[in-house]
Image 1 (cartoon, rainbow, N blue to C red):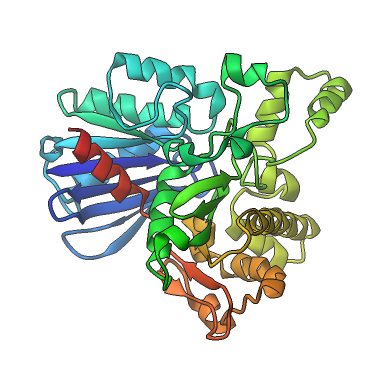
Image 2 (image 1 turned 45 degrees about the horizontal axis):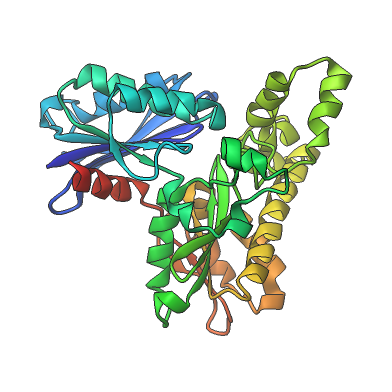
Length: 398
């Protein structure tokens, strides 16, 4: 069977066409900088073996998905001749609320419930739905499934997911930490465990999923025991356009100062904050790095604040697990930005972390151990493969 996996992020859309029997990738690509100037699609041509980049104006995820379809069926570069060759589609959906704790087949009720959770993940659920609806329109008889980011974190103990607010809000409305990037954290933590000379049941791993959306998870004994995102993906690290952790009173303070309502303030926190808000330049770390090279003060502030927010969470999870065996970096920034990896790791000499600076600087998108022989903690760059996880879940369901 050929399974098309659609994985939409806040400013990106990855796709893979996977042969479910061999788990070989028949086609893959990435639409990046969606909604940002300079958007493009990158894809590997199965016919020519070329890595192709095309600049396409992609103001939203709907346009990006059409670019993906065009690439798949392209006579010159595509892997298939028509959409009829696709046997199933697996979608990533960020938030399932209390409705879903496993992969499900798409129907009208599922779509309605995903829409009902849109206010919990305003940057992602609407984008996920665009992909689902577009695929249903183009392939109405092809089975489609959705895998939810929240599932992996259901193993968190109550002390990790509960908030210090009246308990009735959890009882009545299920207000709690859910966690996200679950397919990525699940895949990467399993790959990370392969680098350890001990049973998974004894392992203590911290996975740093650093991209436009960023989260860090403590994985003990193969299970998620804490994670940085919360009820929504807004909590945690400073991100591309999200504020991450702030004093909640800031919301009231700004609302009173500027006459804005709660929805307007949350829109600012989700879409105008983070690296974008701090730098005034971009939500993309490559643009931030360019600003740093130019000596731009706000780019330097954005870089340092992002790194520091990650460092504090990694440190807290090391304490929560009473140690750490391995720190893994993944996703767009984690896999490719050696400067951010170095800046984060430099804080952890007290743990005995030592890394090979040359190896770190040359590692971009490959699975590599970058610690030195004397390091007391392993440090591994692991390209995430959320798509393979989603394909497996889709196959198992259908």
